[in-house]
Image (cartoon, rainbow, N blue to C red; front, side, top):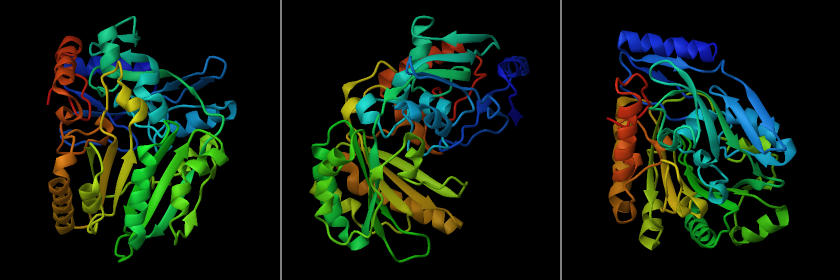
Length: 396
């Protein structure tokens, strides 16, 4: 394992790997870890910690080791936001290289769509800068195609207006899940692009109790947000409601995801819709899973993108999470995931976002065939000796 000191250190490392005939792979924080790293140099970038926000230009420049929380803390006081995901501890660069599904993606698209430049070290160890004009193909590939093409030392991207954000979580007892699911389907069917709504069922380890929750983020004022979400107010029994005006720096508090490492199994599926049959399948007991979550997509995601992340027409993403405590629990979690796949097969898009791939997946699952073919050609052109290795290599 190597921890980079600066961009010059990164260049020296790549030159060494090139001479030695070995590959290197950057380890992101947050989700996205993969297996198959035997003999690969593991690279950490936490010391590449530059953060520069330009409020007038609505841009940010960050080092490859920076997490979203630092960007949000500096951009928020200016009424701006980056396209961060649900957790503020996730790395900006890894998130953007994989596309990046944000709370505000329905309004502004993939996080990758907002990237304007990458500072890199190429596979021969030469520092460079990649933009839409300097190398259009490589710039296209690096925005959503994963970290397979160069070692990134810094990234620049546009910030977006966020003068007001209303968000939080509502929680009901598990037996009310059918009513909450019905409301979720109704609200998401007509939601403006400024509104993102997620549905979750959660069963704490060792507990017979299942909780049903809805998490929301709305780019707008509280009155408008409450009006758009009023359908949920008609469901009795809600025992928690944290919705409020949220500072951009506190965006991670909406989902309040755990940040400590844990032995989880994670899997995702894109859904082409939620009809009555799908809703019934999703509302079956989730054990032995810890949680299932349905994220509403659509909006700008479905409008297309000039990046490798591309168009995402599926309106929902299903995430299944299990806690592995024994070999038997792992097998049971895998079996339950397959039961979901079998029940949901009519609405499965047979694709997953790149940043939601998990061990056992390949990059081919994240991209349409034509996109994967183009990515592979760019990989062959820019890194024929496979010095740089993404978590999910496009050639695998």
